[in-house]
Length: 134
Image (tube, rainbow, N blue to C red):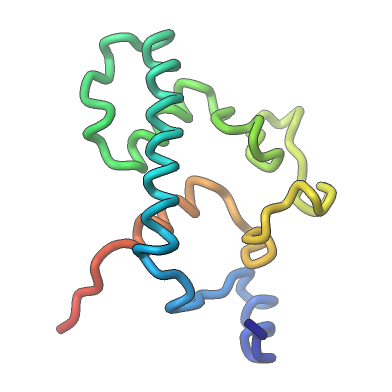
């Protein structure tokens, strides 16, 4: 997909692009949702049993954003930091995206220079909401 000059200018100005119809919900997003749910639930079973046993009996029935926030809180912001160097929230270990070698950056970082995972999860979850037509 080649971006138009107008899209490139908008990206330079705003720092992101909204590209409609790029992903198919069933083919592209559903497998990611299932895999992310599985990863979150695996982390949850370990962390909640270790540090918050009994506090979150209804964890799996909560929405993705709440489950993710609970795990971020239990790990003091370091959830998944071993998977993605950008996600270190400790000021002493924070690395700017520009300073990382290209091999550490997934392709989607090229589209959104202000990317942070919780915000992207929210946008991803919002993008999956049914479209309401008047």
